[in-house]
Amino acid sequence: MNNLSDANPIPAGAMGAEKPPSARERAYQGIRAHILTGAVSPGGFIEEAVACEVTGVSRSPVREALNRLAAEGYLELHPRRGAMVRPVSAAELRDLYEVRLMVETHAVRRICRDRRPLPAALTELCELHEATSAADLLACAEINRLFHQTLVAAAGNTVLVQVFDGLQAPLLRVAMLSLQQGVGKTDIIEAEHREMIDALTAHDEARALDVVLRHLNLMPRLTAALPG
Amino acid sequence: MNNLSDANPIPAGAMGAEKPPSARERAYQGIRAHILTGAVSPGGFIEEAVACEVTGVSRSPVREALNRLAAEGYLELHPRRGAMVRPVSAAELRDLYEVRLMVETHAVRRICRDRRPLPAALTELCELHEATSAADLLACAEINRLFHQTLVAAAGNTVLVQVFDGLQAPLLRVAMLSLQQGVGKTDIIEAEHREMIDALTAHDEARALDVVLRHLNLMPRLTAALPG
DNA sequence: CGTCTACTTCATGTATACAATAAAGAGACG
DNA sequence: CGTCTCTTTATTGTATACATGAAGTAGACG
Image 1 (tube, helix red, strand yellow):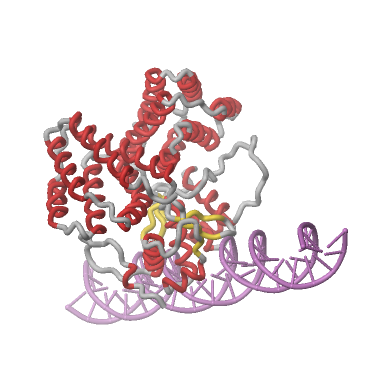
Image 2 (image 1 turned 180 degrees about the horizontal axis):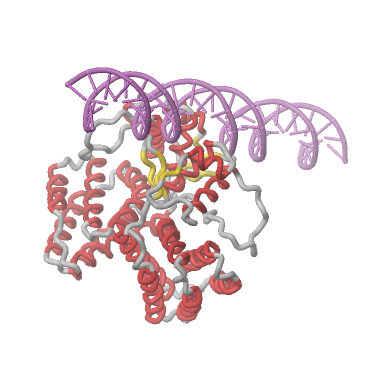
């Protein structure tokens, strides 16, 4: 993943200067949104021409966006066939959460053991989460993703963050599905986030690990009865 | 015009039928080879026009190849600036090995805890390693990579394997550098591999973890005095 | 002599045109 | 009536042309 968190989330909040979005970025965001919102079902194909119409750019940036989305795990590029929206199987989801638990557990241990300070952004993200309408699914999902990403980043290992980011594409899709089914429980999520902040600020490894375990075991349970 | 025949790198593996290489694939292999062989120094920029001349294809496939190489961590794409060959810093190398240790440790725990059988391919790779001339450094490196990949795969988590593979690009570049400097110690590596097989076959978690720790701490030491 | 500015130039970003291939459908034959 | 094949067609793969913005350069001014 080459991007530096340019998977621009929604909050119109404290972002810096506004930049004119490039055609490639518009294509990427547009297609990605279509995948996440379920406008194209898993297993379905995305034609370049359609993506051009939807995003309003030509095929060159659209193709680059499709390549990037494939690299991030959203799509599966079949040569001469097209771009298929990758279905996330139950087995893959299980593997995904096992790896994610491994990563976040490692990050937590690192933070506590090295007595690293927690970035203030974590608390800010909690407040942003509180201020965001629970109806805005994509925004909530992005804020949640940012929280965990920031947490992992606090461990001070850039490669670990890259690995974590690499897991996000399928996780985000599952999150969207589960949220759409109303099993959001954004309140619980946010409460556990604050609990994690507390434990980590105190460098209480055991308690932090306990919260992380609970928190990450929550989601697979929520998405247990999903298709696939 | 440079000869493109030597662009063909690794596929010593058991690939199936021969396929006519697409322009994108030629561009990818060609540019990747140029990076790995050091034809372009870390920090240097690769111009699309040059890449076109070298690989013999037009800008469209070249751009796709550059994007893919950027996604894999070989390049850093600066908008309106071009594609920079990403230098691997000492700090990144340290992070890389920390994550790798985390991954392989997790795999080992999983294998021992679930009492998973070890694939016979591991022993075969050891024998292949023994039969391979220590002078053929590239072959040794490839066998070594395959050994560890097979080991991680034995844990039965596909996502974990993907993560492991994602680490390989920078590791391969470092391996090329270190091999060019003549630091091999292939005998030690192979002995430890056999020790790992023994411990894992017996599902002796403590001993297996001990070997993995020793084994993975060996390599950063070997490459400690590298540039960057 | 240094510096600021305007211009020139060239590489990247984007759009479009052309080529090749695979899927789909029509027609003929068994 | 089914199937095989040939044709058609549409979509991806590739090449090229055009637009945009940045970097380097030369010139003039302080």
